[in-house]
Length: 192
Image (cartoon, rainbow, N blue to C red; front, side, top):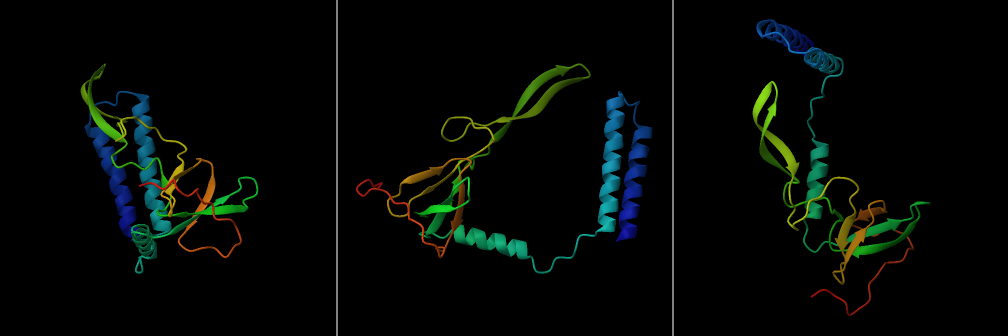
C-alpha cells in the first residue's frame, strides 16, 4: 500500500510537471501559486494515508447507527420526548411530547440552490458560465444559511412548537427518569 501511494504521489507530481511543461506559459504568479498548493496538498494526502492507512472496515457500525436512526425517525405514530434545557445552567426545564423528531426549518423539500447560466466578459475569459444562486423555497421566499430553529408537533394537540435557534433541547424516544414537567397545551385548540 505504501509503495502504491508513493508511486501515486510521484505520478501526480510528474504528471503535473509534464502537464505544466507541455502547456502554454502560465499567465500569472497566482496560477503558479495555485498549482504549487495543489501539488503540496496531493503530497500531504499521500503521505498522510501512507503514515495512517484507512482501516479495512468490516462491521460498518456507523452505517448501522445511521440506519437505526432513519428507521426510528421514519416510524409513523412514534412518540418523541423533547427536553428543553436552561441556556445558563443546562438544567432540564421540562419536556414536550412530540409526534415527530425535531426538524430544522433549514431542511427543505427542494434544493436550496439552483444553477443559472450567465454570460460574462472577464477579459481573458468570455462566455457562458454556470453560477450557483439561491433557489426559491416551496413557500415562495428565499432563505440563507445560519442559525435555524427546530420545530416539531405536539403529540396530543398537533400544536407546532418552534424552538429558538439558540435553544438547548434534546430529543429522546423514551422518557428520561426525571421529575420534570410535561409542557402541555390548552384543550379545545387541537388542529383538525
